[in-house]
Length: 165
Image (cartoon, rainbow, N blue to C red; front, side, top):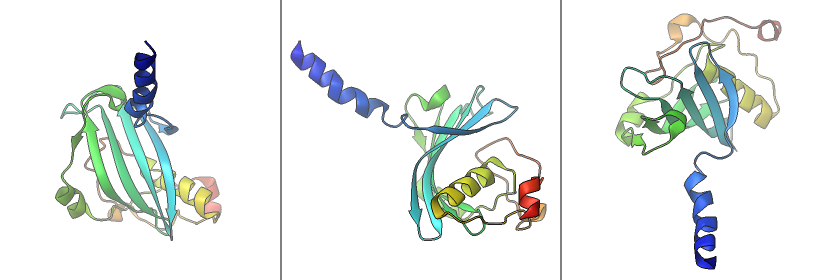
């Protein structure tokens, strides 16, 4: 009996470690919820994991995605380092991975102000670099590349705090 308890004790944290410590940062009107974890500072960039979970699957049957990304704190762009998707909610089940060559071919993605990606990068850069970066004027709608993985988008609107910066 003691062996079973020890086995469960040591295996349980490893089986749930990919789901632990996620911090919710955004929910939209379509039922998508966004989380992040494991933020690391790297010069003018930050590296972190991001999870996007939906209450309904998209057209390809994907409920949830987890990616590792590097984000540029000067212009709030991002580049994917890993990308996994799940056919079950809350990223439960066996993930399917996007091939590394495909991920590398995507390059850097620019984000519009008030998009979920822009907002989390701005928040984490400000938190980890301790400098406020005026961002509202950095992009126009023409520069935005569509996010091939997430189906929702946010309108390009500057908040009053960004416009005043």
